[in-house]
Amino acid sequence: MAAYGFLVACLGLSNAAAADDAKSILKAMSDYLSAQKTMSFSYQSSIEAVTPDFEKLQFVSSGTASLTRPDKLRVTRTGGFADVDVGFDGSTLTVHGKNLDAYASVQAKGSVDELLDRLIGAGLEAPGSDLLAQNPFDLLMTDVTSAKHVSSAYVDGVECEYLAFRTPEIDWEIWIQSGDKPVPRRYVITSKHVVQAPQYTLEISDFKTGNDVAAMPYKIDIPASAKKVDLSELQSLDELPVPSQPGESK
Image (cartoon, rainbow, N blue to C red):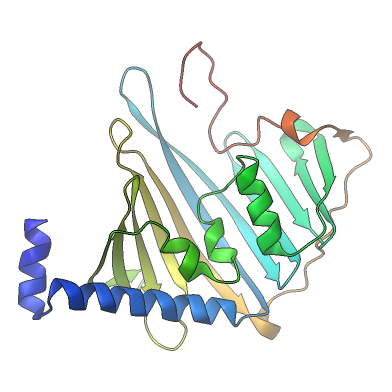
């Protein structure tokens, strides 16, 4: 905190000005994303877990996301413990666990925002999914008690604005590309009340919009060998391995 105060003093910004600046940059990103009818990107995510012996481990996955507003979404994720393909065509949500040779399909007519709300209500929220909503700003600013525009920075050689926010339960940071295409490039969530403060990190690349987005089928073709199961049975699709010992945190 002292280091940040020194940085603000050097930049000639008050805490209030830094907070307003951070909110303004975040709002510009939100408005830009909301204005895109179609967008796609690649990502790499890493999630930290703390073992009962207080050892911090990091699990890495990568994948792609394609969105056509208001009601089409396709997300893939491949990692050491899961190979998942998720499709939503406006009426049906299909989750294909390729590594399990199993899939679940549920009726979910509505918009992507309505789908995200349903997943959150079912305890299936994926960190970073708020960036896909129609209005990311309102979701991201929920319960925020502190906002800071820390500095400019570079992510994969691209100049970004580095913002930091705090809520009672988590701290989160976001790096937003500078210029007329303010897309998120890096997003970090810290669970500050969990032992050793594990983090979730999402790094975004190859962001495309409009006609640059490759055609993507939002209905998944399921192989004949795959077994249909209830969505609740697909417990091995997380970014973390299933706990192998009683009492071990997932």
